Length: 184
Image 1 (cartoon, rainbow, N blue to C red):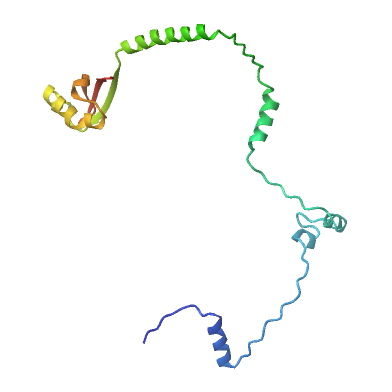
Image 2 (image 1 turned 120 degrees about the vertical axis):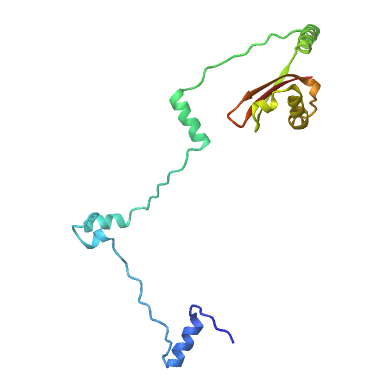
């Protein structure tokens, strides 16, 4: 046998009332009555209105005011009102004949492309390594750190691509490791 405690429901309360012999009669509710605002019941209360004003308000339409963020059209109208129209800009292009245009573009592309390809570009990488700078003082330890840990985070980068390595102290137990790699 088990017992549990719960809130009494409608059936339980009906069973208790029946056991006591009380008749469960539906409660007779009174008809709704019109109510007045606090100010209308007491003539000198804040917000009280005279009977003449109250009668005038009975027929007044209900007005609801809501504040919403300005939409795109509203913002555009406000900006136009504040700043006026923007300046009128006219663009005139003089057409080149097709042969002149293509020759000019090829010449510009080949000169620029050759100049761009000749550029030497390096990318700088910066890491904070939790080790004292003395632990990374030798060339072998730096190369081992680069090869085994740092270069693995960079796709298609090898130790031969590294052009310069700088190790600086970054607090007592950390080092700032910066290195540059050649961009292919």
